[in-house]
Length: 326
Figure 1 (cartoon, rainbow, N blue to C red):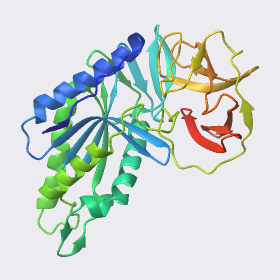
Figure 2 (figure 1 turned 90 degrees about the vertical axis):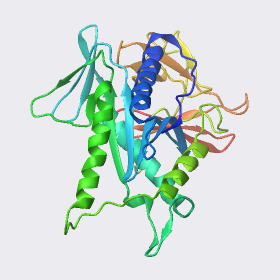
Figure 3 (figure 1 turned 45 degrees about the horizontal axis):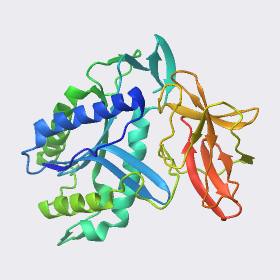
Figure 4 (figure 1 turned 120 degrees about the vertical axis):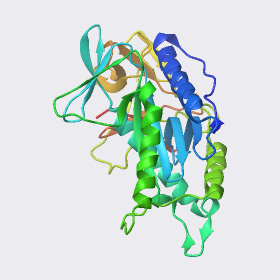
């Protein structure tokens, strides 16, 4: 059952178009497999927010035992993953490091779980033995690589959750079948929590209602990535400047990308004139121009390990702005 289709998006450049096409292709495979399924629910393009943290979930599968998050990755050439879980994508036949999409999906699952647990009473059906807990459900992740891409795995690297897009639906079915077999075993000590039809419907409606399309929130800018819970370490505020590069990006919305090749595979680096975006695909530099509520404001960035916060002394605000890849 398809609960929500992929939102129409305004894309900027070929790399964003490749990403959008990958999401639409995966959504098509899910529609073909589960459109008439009365139990498996599919929500495409779900954007959730909690306490300034954003989870942009490409595809969410809701089934009788929990959830499967699918992260779509557009790969026109090749990606590799080594035995340490470190990822690289190839650009002009040269490897460039990239954030792990597996870890990205796990962070999305963590935020989804937090949101559901906070609303447990509204979405979980009460039973004779008490209120069911959404925290006890299954939260699995899958990474869908474009059909045209190549996955290069290092020695002794399995990562069963990383598959070509056309293999994902079979993996979903096998995952659900595994949980069913575990519940059907006689004298089994491992019983997986099973959702009722009412709870499946409640969760589906709640998540669709919780969807926050980009630009609908009053808080801006939002983080592009999905932060982990961290303890602030040594940090210092640094004023932003546009002198690092002739190309400067106005971040009034959360569309941070390389202005040279349009890739979103970027990180924040520090140079002579302050912080700027460094592209991990083409090695290009993009300056950053921060905006605040008033023209008199002079927002700064504060760094705390991998996290960057936009802070304004005039407004008295501090917002998570970006997380660098590990």
